Image 1 (cartoon, rainbow, N blue to C red):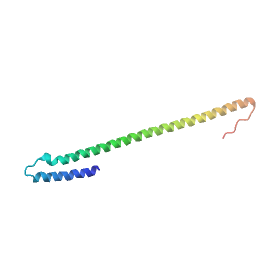
Image 2: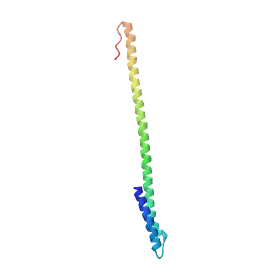
Image 3: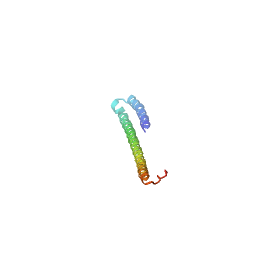
Image 4: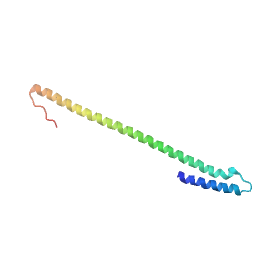
Length: 107
């Protein structure tokens, strides 16, 4: 889109030069006004593209942080389950030795 507007600017400059040179009473401002409008449109397009790119970059950064947090929570939950299972086995084996029972088999 910006390239197309850039091409329109080049064509407008060429046309403005021809109009300015062919006029009997040349007025530079009148000749270049359409070109200045196209330059403003191109600046707006480029600003919108830059804004969209920054938005996408921020979104990707937030998603990476969210994924990292989710993975850390999953790791901590897994660790808590393993620790809880180990405590139950240790508790069972401690009380089993007192009563003479066999410890449970590991899965």
